[in-house]
Image (cartoon, rainbow over all chains, first blue to last red; front, side, top):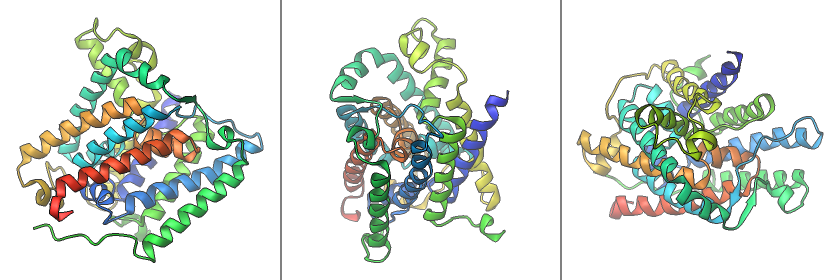
Length: 185
Length: 173
């Protein structure tokens, strides 16, 4: 029973953050692809930087070990991302924001959304043996992270990544790297 | 405590919160956040109840077992996290379609929105399967640990997302 409490709490805070960032709305998601509202990108990049600053020093000090990292198989990661972007721009949600949005009382997220995710999950699971192994074998580097793969100092990679994020935020917020939204009526 | 009642936070503030959740997930649970995986587990459980023979395969037995996993509990947490967020800003409301911009993009018909969300969700979940995760389980969770997989996924997602939005919005992009 106690095993349920931690994931429940983590999920609660995750869903809460998605709600407060406004990601449970069609407009927020699609407008990042129209480059007229970069909130999704700012939210994601901030989260990445905060976590890597928190976990990499702990790992280097030997206090923690990383859980299994998502595997890198270049073709599958890229092709999956390409298909994913079509669905995301079309529907304006993704699996996580659908769950949080359904919790806000959105029946369009809860009913067709949930049914669609379950249908997609069944389709993938039933075709897994034919679809997945060929793709995941191509250019497979396994479960790895950039500092290990390229054998560079992790603190340096984290520092460069954080700097890139700050430059990006500066360009968006101060240099107007964002398109004006056209009138839609 | 006024900030907690605000409907929208700065994306940077909400991002810091997610980042802290990310640290807690790695340090205390020694696992990662995710969403699409939980749907696979649930689909497996439903599938085994409806068509046990078809769903008795490697995938639903071993890869994404048909049972209540950590990912399923996480998904339930995300759902109620959305509820708490909406209650905190008094925006919780049962509704069937409420996005103004959606109506401007696709028209006001409810069936059309419900159909497109259904189709979109199928595409998303299948794609997440191929990629090895979704926005939460791969882009965010992998990215925060600097996995190359995450950045390949994000690049693909933005490239096709921008293109798809261009096609849908046409002259209004």
